[in-house]
Image (cartoon, rainbow, N blue to C red):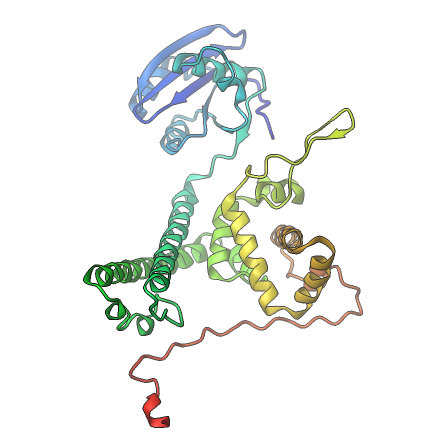
Length: 378
């Protein structure tokens, strides 16, 4: 975890809430020169900082759900903005007495002492695109829950479940009518209506996000798509969750951020386990786990290497090893501008034969009217 090392003349700590923000400014000697509870508006922030604009001042805040506007306001005022890592700011939550006034003072003092844990403040230029991509992933999970509910209802009432994906109309026709009661039919009809509504919005978001990615960073987007197992959606997630690759000095830093490698606690030569597995970016963890599953489906060489890993480590750990390798390969591809090499990814000798995985075509689902009648074959 990185800490903010730069020295300034004044340090401003903000305890940010939805409507109010307690603001504390201390000088380099630790003396408090400003300490007030303000409204969460750019105007109040500007009024508070105006007497100190001609001095070297920096502002810090803990990473909360609403830090975007504060970062933009500091950018307009030409005040350096530092975002604090919420999990790392244990000094705020460990005292006997805790309130907003003391929290703002502790933030300012941590910043002054060089002990302020830094999180990455996502740049304004692609911030909304990342949020849109996350919203798309949320909608797909909601749709999957609705589909799972329809299938569990089929099992409850002993009704034949659809053979394919419920987001296709051919697998929805006549399904509600097979349920015995009016209430159960209405339940299925409502689920199907929600699935169709979500499918429409998801398709709209995917089309817009691909267009935005081709405009924001087309080179990075297409290099990601060239990696086997990564298509449009996973490339979008990785692109917008990484943001700026330069913030990761080494591949290990990127793997740690993506939750692909565990941490380690040790003291006096003793190992106390690997906590902190939930620290990092869950979206990147999901993206690389999905990419590994797709790579295993399409690549015989990867499937053979995975079989050896599974025999030695077990299935769960083997999948984690492959995901970490894929994450490292993606980092090097993006940093060097190289082409993905499956031979290097699997650490195969130069004389080993590697089959290039072919992209799978999406199977078209025929409509009910176009399907041949079973009576004609009777």
